[in-house]
Length: 265
Image (cartoon, rainbow, N blue to C red; front, side, top):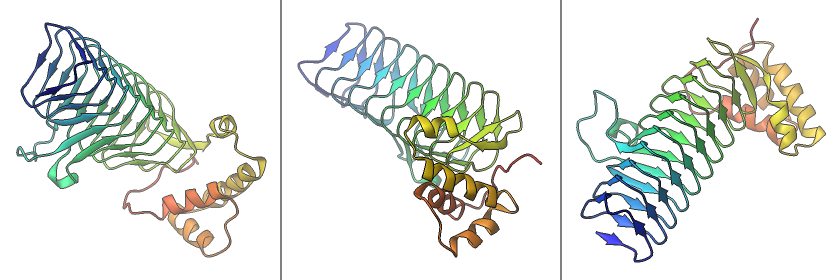
């Protein structure tokens, strides 16, 4: 067990032999930390936090009471193989959030990027890949093997089906069930979610130029005329104007055999 002298640890916390506690960590009452856990500089565990498995948490991440991180996957195929959970820096993980380690069949790693917010009672399942600055609102459930790229926002009480990809900058409305891939910068809503359009508000807030927005809107209009993959292949054979439009086309032609959420007819 390695505990940096600058770490502040409550007397009631349980830290198992083998754990690594970095500088300036704060571990509150009744936390339980397993033998393979690594906490980076300045990690704060408020109280009653349980961290198990081969779990690494990046610097200045704050974990709120009753979160459970690094427990084994909720997957009946899991047979105790060695898998990991890696959480990046400056994340805020609120009350009752759960995140599981990976599975052998999914690459063995569940990964979370930097500067994310996981509101209370969210779940991140095995083998998920979560990008930077992602926000999961209260009680969002992300199933196994999903990919959420940078700057994705998922509204409260929504569910994301296993193996789904959600492209960069997409926003998912509350109470949505996402069962197919979501293109980057999309706006998705509805109980059985459909593609409502583009996340223009988010793009404008990030300072996207008028030219980029115009090119993206034109590409979206072309894609919406038929099958997404067929339209993307046709567009990719010509000159694609704008980086965002190219990003959407590359996402559609990327490595996935799932269908896409498309505009409601």
